[in-house]
Image (cartoon, rainbow, N blue to C red):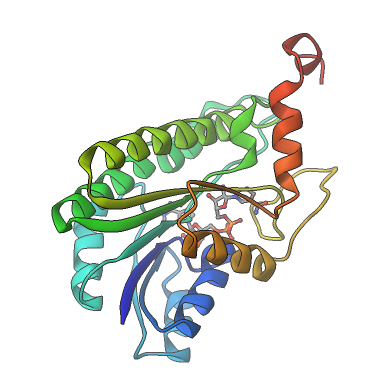
Length: 237
Ligand SMILES: NC(=O)c1ccc[n+]([C@@H]2O[C@H](COP(=O)([O-])OP(=O)(O)OC[C@H]3O[C@@H](n4cnc5c(N)ncnc54)[C@H](OP(=O)(O)O)[C@@H]3O)[C@@H](O)[C@H]2O)c1
């Protein structure tokens, strides 16, 4: 049985992914701060699901992950889905800082831990859910977009590192558009996918060991548009 850890699986995309991994015969370790949600989920399949409730911004992530991996008996795949972000019209530092603490600081600690684990083991697959938001800046949520740009760039660095290590380490960067979870904030949302549809597409991208994937697929069109909009126009948007 393959072993996977999903960080940020008490709700949203991570939660929808757990069901797919269980159906595909994985042993899954799941995390989140909300213990009750995790416990309820474990009850649905105690043989295949193990839980660990902790806050990635305050706890020792490497210790918690090491304990969880011991519980499930190894690690082939780690999916980092925990993320946060707020609309921040007034540019309050507390909101920006909370986003950076999880999406930048904890992100770095967790992906570094996973990479080093896989390097030592000689193989493994690291998947992180970044966002299409990481492709350009945003006046509505500056830290969110900037933190997602950091993630995209960091994952690219790890992909290079994996290649030069000559080990079987794969790095997948999932860039969703809008998905119907608590994270989808703000007006003017379009092409909003259900989390089940998003998770199915993400699982397909993981199986194919894709480097980068847009979810749903048509968000690749928006990504191309975002990349070509000239600065003189983008700054007025
Ligand atoms: N939904 C979208 O439209 C969208 C679009 C692009 C990218 N994304 C990205 O997709 C990822 C998953 O988000 P989602 O849409 O599934 O939202 P979600 O339902 O809010 O899920 C976020 C998950 O992260 C966990 N989490 C949040 N803060 C945490 C912390 N400090 N420590 C530990 N766990 C924490 C939450 O669990 P607890 O609350 O129990 O801790 C939850 O399980 C995020 O990285 C987000 O940026 C989402």
